[in-house]
Image (cartoon, rainbow, N blue to C red; front, top):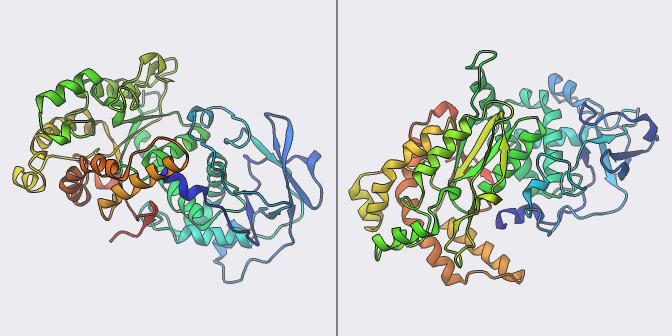
Length: 462
């Protein structure tokens, strides 16, 4: 939840604000039109949700490139709310994630189809241009192969995807803070567009009529950096665009409580294997069976359950959740989003491992078996890079402090240090190779490296 704090910061009032342009997703409804107002119409609940005033035309500056100007001069609305509202919420939208994907939830948790009545007169477009320029300044634009012209040509998509994410995270899209705008338009939407290109490339390798296995995208990122939130946002955008997606984590493949106890007993005194986390604490056969089954979900009617892990069982030591609680998915799958803190780690020379931490030697040996059960299934990679492994401690501490402040049980500062210390040796040993060489078997052409700062936002790589 700490990764979401940036999305919940109150916004300062803005002079000019923006709604998506008129297109197939936001359809014209003449019955609701007046010359000075706009309404969002929710077809699920049959009522008008919001009312906003439109403002006069402002000419697009002459310095705007002709191609960009042509695209930006659509019938978009620059508006201000009649009454102020919060840009976010402190409520836990993460409770029951199913409410946000795959079905039309109630207002405030992402909406069903929205229809807006657009005034027939041309409205000002200067804020659309501002957003366009902001998007082009993003650190991922060049990495994902976009130019300013391509951004202009696809600006409608950016607006629709951004609007969807604002509803998903319960943000006021008309009054975003700068950090919220960065998170959506410099991070989540660019990564989604890159994933879409990867899917298109993957599907092009198959002939019409052939069964197309889902593209498996691996997300390797340290704990606490926001990868789960990123993957959650991507899954919902995929569903919005008609892609059938499934999400799985390496956490779902941890050993059962019984087998964890056996691992602990067979490695007495090794703090790195005392609890779940490091290589050796996963059920590798179960991993391979699950990923193989997922890749075979190519036709309608095929179903399977996705395993889940209960970290709260046995006083926090954890155990595999009861299969009756596992979510069921149905084919055909388009994409599998596979995330984990140590995805892509590969064994390194023993002398380097011992220099980091002698206890890591057996972990390094265990890692030899991981490529065949995890990495070889992955077609495309997103690797989120941190500048300093100590960020993990800071992020975990932030999360625990937030929990304590909310009156929930949380680890003390000392307990946080002990918890993170069991992972830091692996970060120090394996991240340099991951960042310099990429994951085992990865293709640089299908690997997106994203540098992030201590605030969990993308930055230009060093």
